[in-house]
Amino acid sequence: MVTLVGTQGSFVDALKELIELEFDAIEAYETAITRLQNEKYKTTLTEFKGDHGRHVKELRGLLIQHDIVPPTGPSMGKHWITKGKVVIANLTGGDEAILLAMKSNEMDTNTAYRRMNERLDIWDDAKDIIERGLEDEIGHKKWLEDHFKKI
Image (cartoon, rainbow, N blue to C red; front, side, top):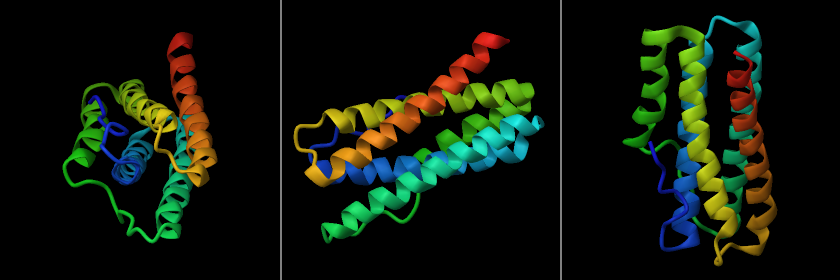
């Protein structure tokens, strides 16, 4: 899936979409972790899921500080795509296929955070939060890319 997060007309709308994408990522990680066989992979993905949980908390807090009601869960349409990739991967190829599906999901979150970070209408109090999120997402993607270089 190629994400459109960050292309919305306003920063608020883009931020809401980013939060929904983060909820989607958490669900995908939960799905992956329960299906993985390798304990090291489970541990690493649990850490990444924790990062996504922190992102949700920080981003929701940002909207609340601005008196804007934040999303409370994933978008109903997109979460089936991110989670579905993992379920299908599990059916077709085990741990490596699951990690490949997660790499695809992380490419979307990297794209979304890059777009958010480059927005001209970004709030001053959002800059550090978005930058930290981007750094986390880059790290997640790098771990997955490095994993596939080793095999």
